[in-house]
Picture 1 (cartoon, rainbow, N blue to C red):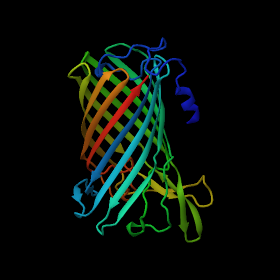
Picture 2 (picture 1 turned 60 degrees about the vertical axis):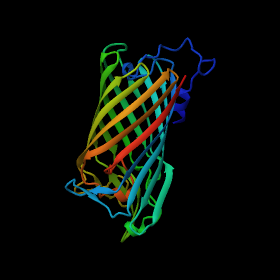
Picture 3 (picture 1 turned 90 degrees about the horizontal axis):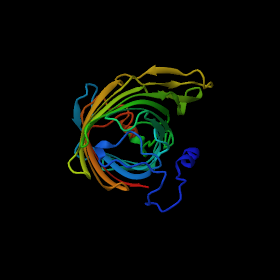
Picture 4 (picture 1 turned 135 degrees about the horizontal axis):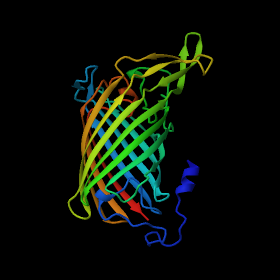
Amino acid sequence: MIALLAAILPTAHGGVFNTKTMHADWPERQAQHEHVLPKGWMQVEIGLDNKTTHSFRDEEGTKLRYDDEVAWSYSRMWLRFDQGFSRRIRLYMHVPWVEARLRNDHGTLVVTRALGDIHTGAVFQPVIGKRLAIAAKIDVKAPSGVEWPGNFIGGPTGTHSFLTGTGVTNVGLHALGRLLVVDWLAFRIDAAYVWKVPGIVGYVIERDGFGNGWLDAGDELVAHGSMVHNWTRDFALSGDIRASYRTTYRIGTSGPSVWKANLSPMENTAGGFLDLGMAASWEPNPHVELKAHFRSQVLGADTTHFAALGLEEYSPQPGTELGAGAVVRW
């Protein structure tokens, strides 16, 4: 992480918002944005998103409502660093802080605030300035959040904190595409395969002693498409659809050896999710952007396995996500 920060720190001299000779031209409209930043540009974004739900999905994917007093909330504050490392390469690091909050049917409030899992990666776009833009991205997610419960007692009656990290490493390989129909209208797609590396996520107390608790979180297929329309030169609206499928999860222990894990599949953990959303972006000049979005889950699989852990990546709960962000560039 330190090495990546060193790589993306700007080295040019001059005022933050002064035009530099190293800068390539910034696109006039949001629809014209490439998959990479123009060379020499650096941007920092502070983003917020929140999902609140009063429901869960059973093994058939049917949405069922909790008791009226029960409310689950999952909020994140993102700090995103992006840099146009070269004309065709974009480097980034995205850091979330998570707040997981549950009010149960007894009126008890359980809240956890901690660092989430950090994403770092790179985007490579071989051809710049064409109507059709194709790029490749590699995204690595490091397990850096709160990854294990705070006590030895399992079950809902013993829950006094939530996880903010998954405990495993992800490696995502993405294929990106953008078709600029006209200067104010573009279609984008992001198709990805996410390999979730099995790993030790904690210790298990067994009858004959301790064991290493292993989790294979199942790989994930993701397809995300959007249409971006500039209503004016500075203001754009977009609609998007996101589909994801998670393969079967496996869980088990390795005993005294960390190399021989006995993993068993978990029932009803494979399944797909479908979200629809909209977003707005206002970019009054190249150095500032304000944006907002909402996204709602319209279809989904069983969410009961990991609901008590508080991990949206493992088990996206039904509900609507609201978010906003502010970007500064130089």
